[in-house]
Image 1 (tube, helix red, strand yellow):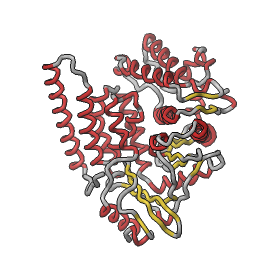
Image 2 (cartoon, one colour):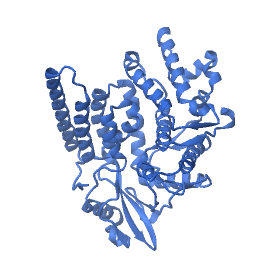
Image 3 (cartoon, helix red, strand yellow):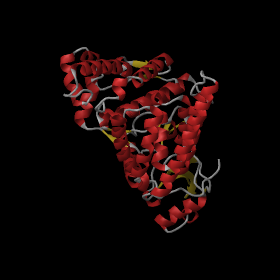
Image 4 (cartoon, one colour):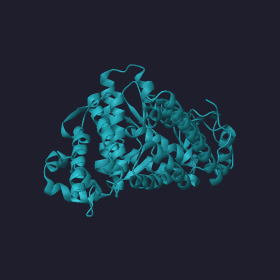
Length: 435
């Protein structure tokens, strides 16, 4: 993959890149309308493909929060046409890497020395590159290490980048502007945390220690003396990302074992720690032939307020869904309905909410769940598509749902998707009170 020799870091240069990309997207629409003139039945597939390529190429060059949003939207598959899903998913672990001289510059800034002065060996080319940083392989004192280096200017450009991304999201995906504003606010706070590598190391050590007794999980050790605000050094963890792992044709027993470890990992964090690794995309997990699972990135962690936790998980009870008297106060508390909604609006949103909760809560309603069931996921995608086309939701005067739910929902949805890709059947452990 071609390396990148520089990243636009100033507001003006980054904004200029968005303007240039916007012009390309506009040109793609003109070509699309031209095709429609000669063939009225021409669909959007070619337009989506051209737009996805142009936007991804631009975001890849900018890196940082702009590319991170693309990665997040790729996880939220119900928002995106297939062309965008496929292209944006590349940002999870195969974005264009940064050239070695820029890596050396980062080391000089934080350690006063180049990488080869700190490590016995250090790969000049990145072995993985994602949205916020890239990983190099190194050796020191007989240990093989992974060294994550943040791209220059990422932390400083979070706020301005998200403002520039918003018009693309509104135009291309038809999102409700008020919900998108809430989404972007929450994303901004998480991205600012995600660029703080000192915070990430602290969280990684704390959560790894708290989850160390869960069977079949593996966490790297972190080396604070070789880490800094924009550099993290940790143990190298062997393993494959899920697509490569599945190409080895693992047995169902191994897939179920890894799936169970993944479920138990999230269950313990959410219900016992009240904070959770909130970025369950394929690039953050390494799967191994013996059925163990490596967890390698704690940049995005969502702390769960107690009052939100209690209200949110009460909704997983089938009995509650059938009891409007008990349900409606919780829907007010979680901002699914509002006092100034009309009776007709309240009736609509309560109906939508019940349908969503019954479907998304399905794995909690039995002792085990087969995530290989593609029919279940088709129901989710069909519901998402139907809701995405509802004018009442697109034109709502309020965002629907607590901002805390944004990362919890996408955490569960990302977990479900990974377990579906894995084809795993798991025992869906849950707190006693939720039973």
